[in-house]
Amino acid sequence: MIQIENLSKSYNKKEATIKNMNLEIKNGEIFGFLGPNGAGKTTTIKMITGILNIDQGDIKINGYSIIKAPIKAKQNFGYVPDNPDMFLKLKGIEYLNFMADIYEVKENERKNQIEKLSKIFELENVLNQKIESYSHGMRQKIVIIGSLLHKPDNWIIDEPMTGLDPKSTYELKKIMKEKAKNNQCVFFSTHILDVAEKICDRVGIIDKGELLFVGTLEEIRSELKENKSLEELFMEITKND
Image (cartoon, rainbow, N blue to C red; front, side, top):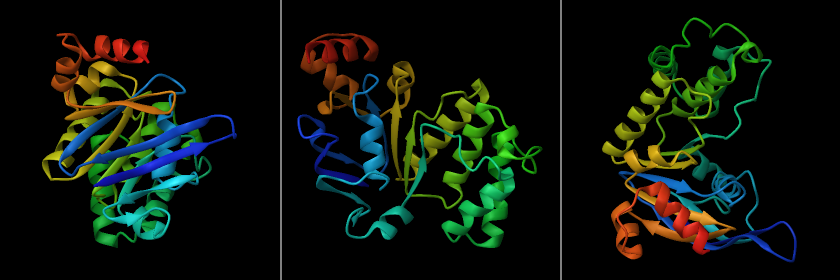
């Protein structure tokens, strides 16, 4: 479970980037975090994961505050950032072992996880190559695998489908659904609204740092009294703002 309490962030004194956000992502659900470019999605995620400092409020991961107990909080999630260009000088297998070391994944467990996930994402034949030689999609897949090695209860993924081929996109969505089925939490930032419409249990729509709506697609339709697609409803809500 991820709890966001009275969260605010400013990069200058004139205007808040994130404005007093309150949000709870429950166990057993895929939560879609939607918004235009520059709306505050990635800034919010970077505060959830402890990359950015919080100006006001708190974020709790399985009850652990990212401010007061950052190590405990970070042990309880896996994170896929919006940019996979990292640790490029490492070989794929070196990166995965590094991630497994950080999360203290035991030798047998990490071996099984690496073997299983590298086959799912078709990277088993390139693990001994440097990540800098990978395509963008391959880099995305190695980061996804690294985030899953410790079987996190909370999976925080920021635009994870960018650059993925159709098969890998399918496998990613399958893993997301399995996590929700196992009473785990998936926090999913995306701009691909038709994907969010098909797989998310609830969505949150953010624009200009403000959370405009949280609920199911049916609840959005009911509030707007319109029987439209998520894409059409999204445009309606952000236009009204």
